[in-house]
Amino acid sequence: MNAKAALRQRTPARKATYRDVLDAPPHLVAEIVRGALHTHPRPAIRHAIAGSSLGMAIGTPFQWGQGGPGG
Image (cartoon, helix red, strand yellow):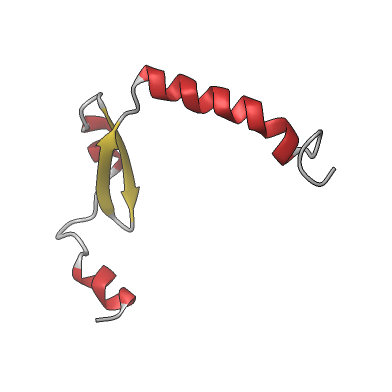
């Protein structure tokens, strides 16, 4: 089975709506992808802080080229 056939096979019976996103429990992140509602746990505050800190630390050298590898 190719990838397109696999995606068609997993098409939900009804398309998710924005109401489904709003009705998701507050501890989950909800999004609609190809008409299907997908949820995953919201990151804990410690993980969010770690991700933000890491982004600040490596953002300047790698995104803007200031003091990063290769000049």
